Structure formats: C-alpha cells, structure tokens
Length: 201
Ligand code: 13P
Image 1 (cartoon, rainbow, N blue to C red):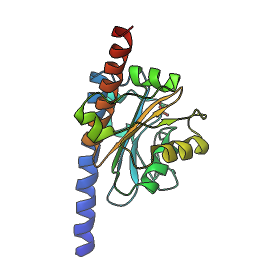
Image 2: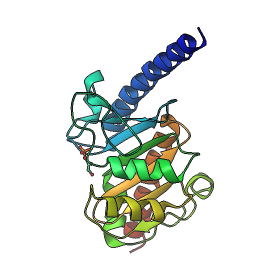
Image 3: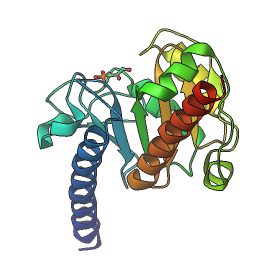
C-alpha cells in the first residue's frame, strides 16, 4: 500500500513537472529569451531522474512527447525522442548542486553578446547584486560535449547564472520559475549594460 502511495505521488509530481516545463517554455519564447529551436530546460524529478526538453524543439511549442526522462548518466529512460544535446550540462550541474532543481539554457541576445566579448557585466541594481552577484564567464568549449559541461559547471560554481562564451547562458534555480526569473534578470542586466555602454560613448 505504501509502495502504491509512493507511485501515485511520483506520478502526480511528474505530471506537475511536465506542466511546469510546458509553461516555462512558452514563457521563455514569449519573452524572446529563446528563438527558433535554441535553448533547453529541465527539472529534477522526485526519483532523482531529470525531465528535459527533447533536442531540436521549439521551447514555445513543447508537447508532452518533447519532455524526455533521463537518468543521472544522461541516458533516456524509455522510448521516444532524443533528449537535449546539452543534457550533460544539465546533469553535471544537478550532480554538483543539490540545491538546484531546475535549469534553463538560453542564447538570449544581449547576454550572449557580453559572453562573446568576454566582457563582465556590471551589477546594475540591488536585485542584480542579490540574485546574480558577479556573473562568471565560461571559456568556449564545443557545445554538447562532456568537457563543455564540466567547465560550465565549474565556472558556474555556486552562482545562479553564468555566461557561456560564443554560446549563451545558463541559469539555475530551486524550481523552474526561479530559474526562469534568473534567466530573465540576466538578459535584462545585459540590456542595461548595453545601454550604459552605448549611451556613455
Ligand atoms: P538542443 O536542441 O539539443 O537542446 O540544443 C539547443 C541548444 O540551445 C544548444 O545550445
């Protein structure tokens, strides 16, 4: 009986997580933080596995079969579409950060430009100080590789977000809305930095 209750709890948790990922994908696309088939998102499940977006999907149009369960080695559990090519990035962060329950990876435009230039973002407000602090910039490595995943995870350290050179951003949180808020804040901070750089010329 106890086993049945546990299964029911896991199923309802997974259902909730699926809904959250679909909502988060729409939010990211709606706010212009991802475009085309870029970006990927994931949530840590109660079982310890991860639910992640499938590779090559439009995050704004996620369907249930675009949400892929993977184990801690990044292997898909069951049949279906292939998981995101950035699953190692997500897995390395989940392994290193027990406090992280959700991850958002974007190519948001302004943040990507600062990452490209390897130019640190100035902190532009109190929320920025509190949530992001100094945002690390991770040197370029081939996306999708374990080497990239490890260096990004190391670069992120205990921070909420990092800039990834010639690639984009990664934002983490206690839940998906937290990670989403971090990704939005990071892009806003990059926009303000851009305006400061432009206006002060
Ligand atoms: P996936 O479609 O494999 O998740 O990759 C998208 C992406 O943004 C790679 O950086």
